[in-house]
Image (cartoon, rainbow, N blue to C red):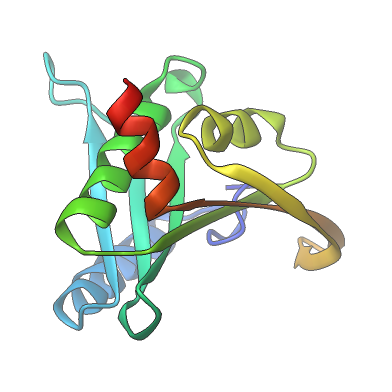
Length: 152
């Protein structure tokens, strides 16, 4: 939670309960698609992947978190790629963006491995636990996604 803009840190059970209730309401309202990321063989939850939607702009914002013991094993990237495909092919999105703190290179790698291009840095744009943090911005357009899918 310390490296995630959308989650409070420390992250408590009460925070999790509120998140689950809000996620359900946001999905019902067509605002967000949030999915649990599970290990196929065991069903164990490794994290969450989500798209916050702006259907009037045909765009989405990719978000994810992975439990500490599951990091650096490809779970976030695999899940994010699946949600990107859903966003572009099933939801007719034109643009999907993502962001991460500048001091979280692992998250930047996930976005780049998923094909998002670096757009820039918003300096001291987010206050997290009393510290202003830089945010790195990334995006992928449907035309770029279609082009990369055609060559793979």
